[in-house]
Length: 481
Image (cartoon, rainbow, N blue to C red; front, side):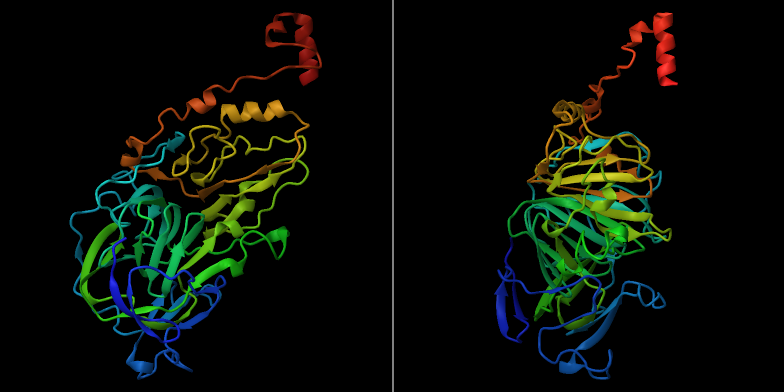
């Protein structure tokens, strides 16, 4: 990664010069949806009010709102930031040049294609030319409109360099980032997050952030939601515990840079287009903050899965980590679902996921290991898309191997794997560059072509070739009603 120097203060108020890098023992706050408070210098947070005439240490008070002012209190999200200079101190936004042609936030016939075919992609190569997180981000599919505040986009990224003297801001929606290769050091206005493969980060709409790559080449997935925010799913009959625990979500602590940063660029995504604005200071000059609208991360290995303990296969909804809801109860704009290591113990049951047609649309990715329903072809860093009512399920090898074990198969533990799914009630439109990609697996359909008929009417010992015999035919008809 590139090195950059900055004068910073840590949570004890100590001044230091940092030249790149994150500490080994990052400090975080714990909880989901909490009201947090953090200050890098003791006493920097105002007491008793949010916006005093003169803030401590001469700081500026600035609010960032993730919901409308009049949203119900239980849904209202906002934070107060106390910063050295306010974020408004920048030159006018201008269209970024060269234009980024592979980001979409408005999905219609002019820029995307409707395609119900099962789609799969192999892992995309890391670019050889210098490419940071912004330039390496590209849209695969999505639905709706960021302008209408309803919809989602699914992106992937490949990058080989850290962002240099610039920060990214998504005005369109929230980013859920799933790294697959290489750690991400993400600096935000609330502090810093180290996110490794097997962890996720959520960067809410409007926050400015920088992505550094301490391990060099990096690849991963991003889900973006418009007009809503991610929340924990209700647990229903599961009860009070299980799935993702609130305390395992980690929020950064206040950390800031001070000093001049000539030519620093804010890159803002607005309606799927990128705009640049210049300023002479770092946007990460927030000395203290409090609120419930914050970036956060989560370690997927901490997920507590639930599963069938006698017969049949549970629906994938039992593996939901986060959900972005719609106004219709139980219907998600986008669910984030994982398939972690777990035991399979169901008796007399086909244990891999069942063959299925779904009113929801499913985009899958694989972080590491293999996926239980695909013996071949679905690789870490790859992806698949099964759209609304398009049939899908285990490939031929998986099906044949499963039934060959018979009903006497004992408990089986799935290990060394982490697959995930972005599931949405909206029908996706696919970007032409994704359909035309050299990494698209155009033979994907072949994984099911080998599925053969195992039909046999054992009670009358009839086969399809026997149906010309009238007696056998009558027996079969009486057997099958």
